[in-house]
Image (cartoon, rainbow, N blue to C red; front, side):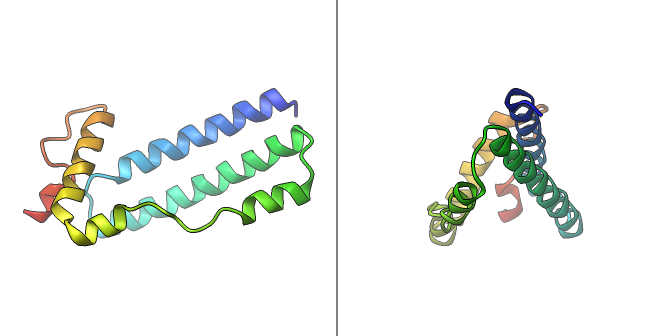
Length: 117
């Protein structure tokens, strides 16, 4: 596989992962649906990783360098978890804004925070 084709495959898998994750943000699904969706997202993340590894190989990146990059991915440093605990309404409203900006159809005024009301 050429590096360019491998990179396009990587981009496709990233797009698929992004679409699945985007649809998981609103809180209008049951827990059962959310668990099934999480499984699909995990599978898409695994496909994205596999495509990324193929692209790295196609670029001639050695396995030790790939392993080092994967090992250096430390814990999530985002502050959203702290915000969620400190002010769940503000965190949910921020997610509402995100969903509204990224939705293909009108998700309503409170696609995330509605669950708190």
